[in-house]
Length: 443
Image 1 (tube, rainbow, N blue to C red):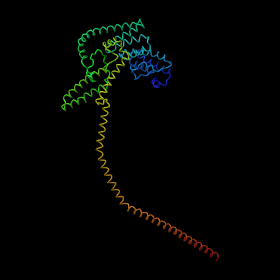
Image 2 (cartoon, rainbow, N blue to C red):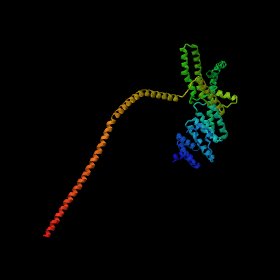
Image 3 (tube, helix red, strand yellow):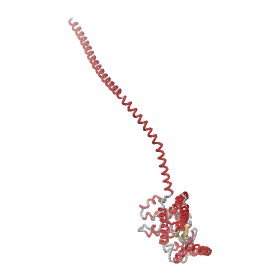
Image 4 (cartoon, rainbow, N blue to C red):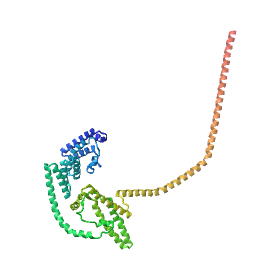
């Protein structure tokens, strides 16, 4: 019944939806107390679907709080009270299951729903330690959350525990930074020499010779997919570029081949650089970049700043598209390419099949035409005897009918004659009998 009611949720009233929510929440709470956290998460995510919709099913970390709260009910305050407990339990479940992004997102929901809740700040600070690689920026954000929590709830003991964990992590970073400074001082001269070199104006060369200071960047996210444009650039170099080099070599144009080969090498360097750029995590700037931005009063975690970096990243991809277009390179994905190859193979098979079947069809048509001509001749030749046969049968039928009529008439006449003879004999017999009786009485 609960599943059927959940399917018809859009037709339900607020009280009916609230009843469904409470039943699902009780079921999830039972799993939570039984330490079955995955089952509890499934029920809690269904609870969220009662009053809100995610962009993708069970992917609440991709849904903003504004989108989550876009439906406005008259009973909106009651919904917020229900969500307050729900976000807390979901955040704890995600934390126990070591799902860092989902836990942080639930804490963001919880904090935006209730800005004066110290538990949301503490749990979000704890969730940042679930990351595979905790950065110094993460530690600074943890300290900020703990400061807010300390102001809201000064007597909370868990704040001190999390703060001790942060101090241990920061001490590790200080040791690492001291070792790193020695390496950076040795490499400074190399970077300055590269900056003083005259950069070529070619688009691909700009990517190849851009600043290689890896510390002025963001952390890489290997889970991010590499854009199709970058992959097509590699395909262009491997196929079209190398074919052009071979053509120059075959024609004896050694200088042109060498120049093109150098350009392709720059393009390969640019491709590798673009692969790194496409996998940057703008939520995790490195320490050197973060400090450099702070000197100019720029917050790298500001959504507007992150959107600007994403726009620059998209502009780089657009430059690649234009570059490939100028070189007359039409790029398609592998799935489409396989479909086109399969379609071409089927069309070729159809053409070969037609070439085999068309001569056989012509031969069959010739045999059929000859047979039709022979039959037409035979039919024309057999028309006259058929007509004569039809005439003779008609005459025979007419003659037989006449004979039958004549025999019937003769039979009727014979019957009449026999009747007359019999009647006359009977009449004579009666006359003789009467005469004998008469003469006997007279005597």
